[in-house]
Each structure stands twice: as C-alpha cells, then as structure tokens.
Length: 251
Ligand code: ADP
Ligand code: MG
Image (cartoon, rainbow, N blue to C red; front, side):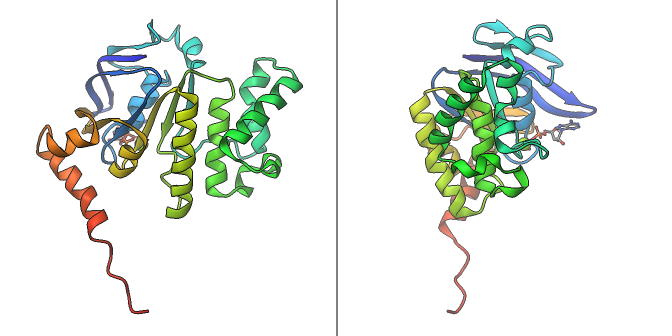
C-alpha cells in the first residue's frame, strides 16, 4: 500500500503537487490521469523517492519514505519513466539485467528471469540483443517493462507507457498490459492522459488538475457524479473524441 498525506512539491513558483492525500491499495491497478502539467509525473517521482516533498508524508508498504529509507524502498518499486528511459548504449538484455547484475545475480538466475519476462511481455528473443534505437516503439516499451519487473517488485509505476505509440501498436500493448496486470496482481499505478485508456486499465481512476487531486473513483463516478465543472469538461472532451471522429475523406 502507498499512502500520501498532504503531499506538496514546488519547482520555483510552480506548485507541481498541491496537498495531495491519497491511498493506493495493494494488488490493484490505479490510473492517474489529468491534463499535461497537472503533476502526474511529479507525483510518481515523489512516490519512487526521486524527488522529495516540500511538505507532507509518503508511506510505502507501511514504511515512511525519507532520504534514508528511499534506496531500500526504491527496490520495492518498478518504475517505467515517461519515454521508457532505456540506456541507448546498452542492448535490451543489458538494460533489463542492470539491477540484477548490481545485486550479484548469477548468469543462470538472470537468464531464467529474463526468459520468464520475455514470455510474459511477448518480446521476440532476437530483440534482446538489439540496442534501443534498433527496436520498434512497442518493443522498447516491452523492454522497459521487463527492466522494471526484473527484481519482481510488489509495486509497478508506469508513466504514460503508451503515449508515443501509434493506435494499432497501442491497442496491442494495452491488451497485453491488462493481461499482465491481471496475472501478476501487483500494485500498479499507470499514468495516462487518456480517459478511455484509464478506464480500460483501472477500476480506480485518480483525476488531477493543477497539482491537485480533483476526483477519485470509478469511470462511472466521474461521469455520473462529477466532483466539479472541470471533471465534466474533462469527461466531455474525452467523449467528444470518440463520438466525432474526423470525417472520412473521399475514397
Ligand atoms: P504531468 O506529468 O501531469 O504533465 P508534471 O508533473 O510533469 O505534469 O509537471 C507539473 C508541473 O511542474 C508543470 O508545470 C511542470 O512544468 C513543472 N515541473 C515538473 N518538473 C519540473 C522540474 N524538474 N523543474 C521545473 N518545473 C517542473
Ligand atoms: Mg508527465
């Protein structure tokens, strides 16, 4: 479980996260959603301990997150940053194995875990020996996910993992990710700015705007019991994209 209590974080005069209180339940997928600049990435980097809050407290699995506890707690969390964050000078295999090598895993143990993860994420075996620039966008995301899962963390944090992919690849990966979350039963927080995607992955949706938590609930709650005008506008804007596809041109 992850608990945030009145957490705030500023960069200069920008209040990126503003008094957020939130509990993230174990074994479920939570979707963190909001417009660009609403503080989603900042919230994730606070949870993972890469940034420190100016105020408020964060607990991970009942441990208070502090600069001292952060390195230990960090190992409980797999983190996929916004653009995947693979090291360009390392092959996919080396990227995935990085932390296991640091931890002194034997070659056999690494290979066995890699094989498990490759089957889970359906990455073609040959892709392991390629460098990130030689992989397709979808493969890169699969590799980033494998790297995040290598040490089998209880918590998986993903920051817009599908943001940069074209629609068909994105739909494929959505299906695969949903199946992976279902199978692993980890505590997953997935960031997206797409409401249909949030609803696809998660029963619980956390909507942010201007660093603040605006509403938490199921998709139906946001639609039927919006916590304010912003929620209504956000839901309508998403629905419009579905209802009014661009007119098809002449054949
Ligand atoms: P989101 O992920 O929802 O798009 P972010 O958490 O990235 O939002 O950003 C929230 C706000 O904080 C934005 O106004 C952004 O410009 C600002 N911000 C984020 N990170 C930094 C940083 N390292 N330095 C300065 N400003 C930042
Ligand atoms: Mg972001």
